[in-house]
Image 1 (cartoon, rainbow, N blue to C red):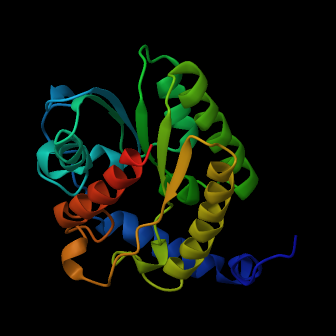
Image 2 (cartoon, helix red, strand yellow; image 1 turned 180 degrees about the vertical axis):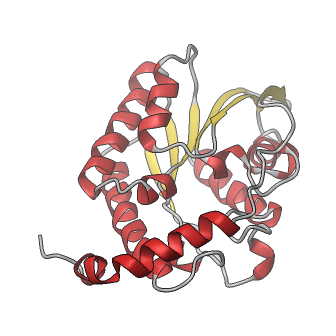
Length: 234
């Protein structure tokens, strides 16, 4: 496989990228995970057991409460049609491997699942192949251990558009994020239970949290609506 331009330029750009990465870490506004329940039972209708798993975006960072985060919006969408028994298993900083470790000790059965992973795999330097392998393990875990019949795998965000990231760091991370997202699309295509969700969002400052890195409640609402549509197509 040919080496991409951003990979070729990483060595000469390394001093700049390192300095920018350090500056972003120092100046980053560290937002907490939102308060509120991480499991519950809501709605009326047929029973639906829902798992939400992933990183800080799955956990709802950028929202003040879980009601304003992905879990709250998604459960409200689905509870119009189902009695939703839901559980949130997500943590800031988690990679795909971290999520695998977390879920392997989880007990229960679920009908549907939404995952949100990739940003931390990018920043941790996880290769495309390792990411694909770990996502495959995750899909198998969801289907075989938990009995999930429909998975919505949220695409790796377009990191080049993160307001908090300066150039050329944004470009380099964005290129790697795009590669991992392509791998995620290929993995989901191998599972009849899985669907890849691409969030094509406009350049709107209201869609970013104050840290310029995480979604805002407005984005969580859009995300939840699109995920609910895919889940209901099962």
